[in-house]
Length: 410
Image (cartoon, rainbow, N blue to C red):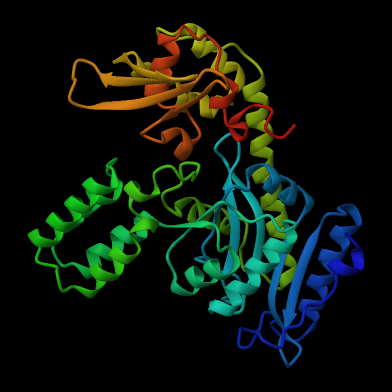
């Protein structure tokens, strides 16, 4: 990428409004730009964009370094962000784009200080993000549900699935429906592992029970059901995200590195210092995952050992309880169609509930009707039970999502 292209100031004739990020004149903004230019001297993948207002003051500032851009290539399937942090000197929102890495730790992709929170501002920052990531859009996005943000995501990432933070939805349900008995029932609809038909039946029953047929908030919420209902989201990968709490935790953690700042340069310096700390935790986790033998605890020691060699330590800790649960399942062969076998998996000793697992012998591909493999990137107990039934002792590659393995970044 041409260094002059990186430093080009974009056309901002369509961006209006915003706060004065420069404090007492233009010097602070100029110093901040100089600081980012200095970072480019040691990082040729450093990327930043800014806009200026008609009076020459700084309006928006987006930046990300080379490590963030490389991390996005590996972990950029999910994108989470919000704009809750307002404690910098100029009382403006800081948006941090993030996801989780192979250790299930927060990983930072980019950041932006914006002068306002209009739809056009969010469109601008998402376009800068897309440009920084060489046009690669996320598969899934999770935010707190701000309308301007939702509209901007629809415009810039039209093919991404947008999930709304369930914590914010539960809080809104409490404030909009003045009945304390409603929220637990609503959460059951939201979190329940149902199919869509079951969800629809439960929703109708819920609305009738609380007499909410004419409630506008309920009607608007129902229109967005594909953005919050587990029944509709099931099968879409979100790396375990259901809330933006990780984003808020990042903002809170960063706040420990920021005191009363004198200018924007101090802010950027503290931010880079904090970012280095976040990345150091990943190095520590890499080291912890690379050494030591795992103590095998399940009945299926061959599969457990195989998984322990592949997954990072934190992901393996999520995998092992699933493998343990597979011992409480039983398998029946349902049929065969060419190289595709179908199995019914029951939770012992019940026979009234079962899951359908298909296995393509030719490609060693497994699928389960619960879709947890697609949703979380870790095989479900139903698939693992079929592996045991087939006497497969090594984790098939088709069941291992590369973003969760020890060598994800190699």
